[in-house]
Length: 271
Length: 339
Image (tube, rainbow over all chains, first blue to last red; front, top):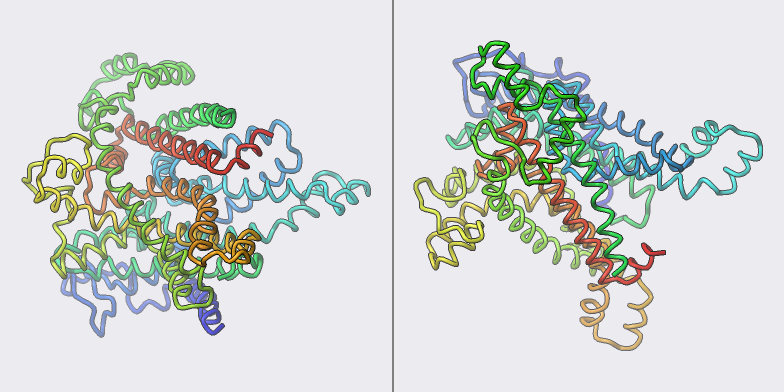
């Protein structure tokens, strides 16, 4: 039991720490994240620069902290977008069935046939290499999962007693959908969204790692790892490691949060 | 048999959709391929219009799509501007490298996840259960490109036991005669132990990187499936009949637990195909992933399109196979689908 408490503490603590960095980043950071200082270029971690300095002599700790906001904004917006659109579309086709159900389900199958990262990579390149498009594309490649979940959950509830009662009572389809069905299928969707956050952080950073989305010199974890990759072989590990660790902790925090929420909602999958 | 047929009929509509999506995405890619084909950015308008006409880029979109489908049906995926080769030939040449990496990572991940998941299910609340939880939670949070770089830093830079993380063999090494395209197997077939060691050493870190990526979902599903099977009535019956614990666990529970795991295997394999791009970039692995990435950055349409088609086709094929195996192993699945 003590271990469960420890992991629940991390499940709340890590996201809280990240939110703090995202909100207050520019004020917490000890140095200007974009100020370069050739004298300390590629200096290893020291008392003055805890995470060392990069090839332009910028303080890595400051850059890692300031980058939190951008990485979280991308992940949160993408998950919110696909969560809201996917839930409403999925619930609607699960409720109304018919032609739209078949068409949307087919489309979801097609999107799911592509490996997520390959689809995201090609789509960002196609729609235009920008942060907004990274958000939209991350949302689109995730949409099928929400649509399927919401559709399945609505499907098993569309004929239950309280829905029939609402129908008899004269509620419109829209009211049944938004007032009676969606709130009842919300908890599995919220669990899915929180598990999705960790994935969205990794996906967006992966895209910027290969040069799509955010670009240097903007501080962003994926870009910073990509910058540091070239110094790994010459032994300057700190340039890539610290932003990589930040990325890992962010994904870990959101995954733990998702697991904790799932434990509450679904007792069977509890460890 | 009817079930197998039904599943096979389900694949073509998905593949048709895949063709449309791959075509549209590459159509929207920025840059004008005609300018690249003219291999001269300052080519005059007339020359570019002539190339447009030659490539069919002046036709309406639906005609372009039909031409594209016709070409794909003949195995023609277009020409890569960067390599100057037909894309189909490039992909065929590079696919074994990616498959060797993905399959060995897959085998490694299953080899780690199976004992971990089963042991965790057998002893709930024990140390091994917590270890399984810890490993799969941590592994799920690992970005593949960071794992790869950390492994390079530790095993190549710090310890010096791994070869330089560039490609499948040491620089200037001669590859064994290509039979399967899997260098480790080709080296064995050529009875060349030193080439085998070299190929395996180059394969080790990228395969481990990708295996760690696949470990979390596998260990999780195996554990959950095994717990589900162990709680089933037939296990209680088998134990009540006095069967040995070993027999109960491995013959009865394990076999039944493997059914849901097979489905997860298919999904995980697909995720790995996507993650290939990042792992291949980190280790300069000459596979289809780095080929597609180079093409994408070079605004070279055809290879990106070919890569997407290939990945989706592999995914559809793998899932079809999984479904058929599932239907054959568990007759209930087949009946449900037929009902």
